[in-house]
Amino acid sequence: MTHSTRLRIVQPGILPEAAPAVNLEDFHVWFGEAHILRGIDVGLQEYRINCIVGPSGSGKSTLIRSINRMNDEAADYSFKGAIYVNGENILDKSVNVARLRTVIGMVFQKPCVFPKSVSENVLFGIQHLKKLSRQEKLQIVEDHLKSTYLWKEVSHRLHDNAVSLSIGQQQRLCIARALAVKPKVILLDEPTSSLDPVSTRAIEDLMLELKQKYTIVFVTHNIQQAQRVADHLIFMCNGRIIEQGTKQKLFSTPEKDQTRKYLNEEYCDCE
Amino acid sequence: MSRELANGIFSAVTWIAMGLCGLILIFLLAVMIWNGIRAVDFEFLFTASRNFGAGGGIFYQMIGSLLLILFAALICFPLALGTAIFKSEYLKSARVQRLCAVLVYGLNGVPSVIFGIFGLVFFVNVLGTGISWFVGSIILAMMILPTVVLATYHSINSIPEIYRESALALGLNKWQVIAKVLLPQGIGGAITGLFLGLARAVGETAPIMFIATAFTGVEIPGSFFEPVTALPTHILALAQQAINEQALQNAWGASFVLICLVTVFSALGLWSRKKLKTVGLR
Image 1 (spheres, rainbow over the protein chains, first blue to last red):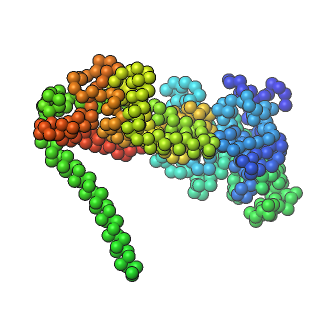
Image 2 (image 1 turned 45 degrees about the horizontal axis):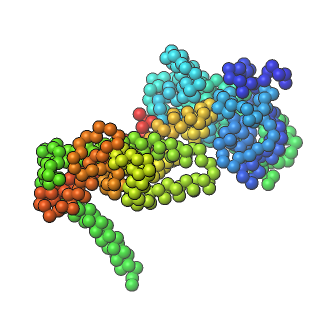
Image 3 (image 1 turned 90 degrees about the vertical axis):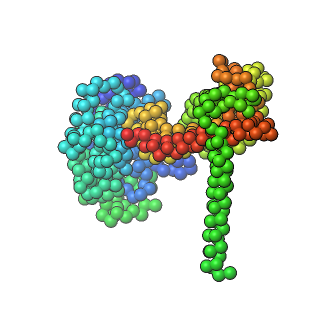
């Protein structure tokens, strides 16, 4: 990695044009005494859907939440190792965390819209980062509702309270809100686990669209879903990465028995 | 004893307990209204007291009480908001959290007369403010601080974590999360707490009687360091000369007005809880 391609999150205003790769090197996490992630080495590829699968409690969410430093908020969190985004270690103390999160956006398991109008929700992040004219605001709202296929459904009710949308629409609104901040990496932490099959499908289609522009890191416990959308698949268990590679390789010719067993039977005996 | 009988006795006891509670309140209010309402008329409400309270009305007492609690609210609210936000959002250590809770509950348990003595010693004597309504407001603010802090804390702390995380994940810093997400949703609880605190403060006698009020010869104060005359201390003074029929009558009237003020603040507290809880939703 050359110096010139660095993300420079520390310096405001200089952001990469292209979506970056994310590399974790010997990354450990502890919550108090509990050792949650144990030496993670993984490369998350740009313009791909990097899908993390594994049983409950395997550390998937902790891993994805480390990439935008959401775990920093926890009282007894500690870590070791490094996470490089375009060559810069984002765990460095000098990194401006709020700014980092504008480059690495996140959508959570449970849709959480703010009790404000649909437009205000789309603008919620971006308008705290820069001043926008009325025209720019309208444009941002329209662009991002279109890019999440919500525009047709909600264009006539932009001023309605976002809480009145269906859960599936709320989750797409959360994605629109995250995209409006113009991130380069999008973290999706089980974004469809509380949705119905139709909304789930809509979000999967959206992810396939979004990978043209962003690096996507996607956590799911649904193996069929991983099979539908993943490019790069990472299987985690008990705080470790058991195996990683292309979806085709892991589903057809996995190197480890544990991987084959989990992907076929959703059962893991790595404890 | 059969199970049915025990059950019957138990529910009867709870009914009697509740009935007694209700009766005490109804009896108090009935006596207050019966005696008080006869003393209250336009002249009573809008004229100054004369003849050591036995004549005239309670206009300046009402103004004094309202002034005291208005400034108590202005002093208390930002302090309570800051304390509650600090406790909910910045304090991570469970041990310090517990210590903070003990301190707040401890402050709540201090008898009101102690606040009065503290004000007398610290402000009036050490700082040399003299008898001052503003010192009275400070002391009342200190007294209701725990009520308002706890109400605000619970209101902010009960906002689900996902709202904080969603805002942080969009690149907002902590201050922006507090200002744009937590305060709009939590302010209703804070205002409810403030009104309930004020409902208590307006009726307090002990904290202000040594430091903020004078009985006669006081109208609207011209500076921060002058005494006022207030309803609860006026009632106390009138009750002490209860041998005079007219003074007693005026004491009932002033008590009735005081109860009305307490009721208004309590009602505002309940109203704000209902109306402002979802302030962000509108």
